[in-house]
Length: 319
Image 1: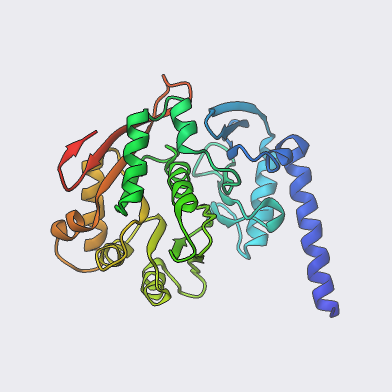
Image 2: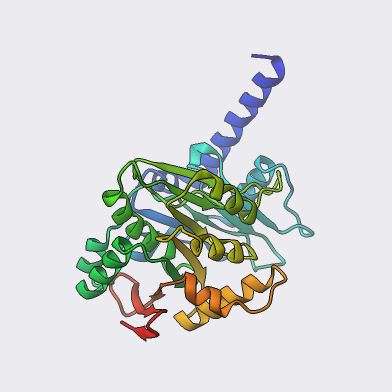
């Protein structure tokens, strides 16, 4: 090992130790809890934790100065800076923190420093567990399982923090258990969150630094002989490439999208397609998308969320 590499290794070890000390042992232990989905520190110092199937709960407090220091360390790790002129820090945390998705901000964007840490899925909340917790009805679960077996393309829609990724992983669990080595699954994401234990899987991640976006990965995917194409969140013109891929011999896909109801999800999908410089794609959307699952937060529900609607796009009817 060269002297430079040794210095880099030592600097990294010091940074990790500082992060652990700033977060404190209680928060650090949350990274070992497989049920934890998200850790959030608000500008007032209140810390909240969201767990699989249990919703969000208050966890404790953290001093504002510690949060500010954590953002500085994350900025250093990501080779950037955080200041009044650049008050946002976003990116993947070090491997020691599971490469969790980090987003943080300092004043003047908010009254105080804050962060949200999205942990990667390490255990899957199954469809049967959704039924047991009352988020899904048995009829809804059976409809989803049948859609998977019939190789229908499923769009999971919902607001921020509604549980789209967790629901997607529950559906992918069905795909994993029923897939043979002959069925090749390709997964494309910005951050690794989707979990698939099928025997024949390839997972791609976008790389902003290298100019590898989701559209480029979708084109690459078609050369990997996919049977199913699964995508994390669809955010931009990549929606057009995804729909074309789903509609040309690759049925049985899953993707997530931010929207407040199934109709809004289809409208947003069309708007994203138009970012590619094409006219409205209503016909393509209705040909490529079979089912829209809408998951929503619900403060009255013990699990904090529920499946609010299932739209069969071809039939134009709700379940």
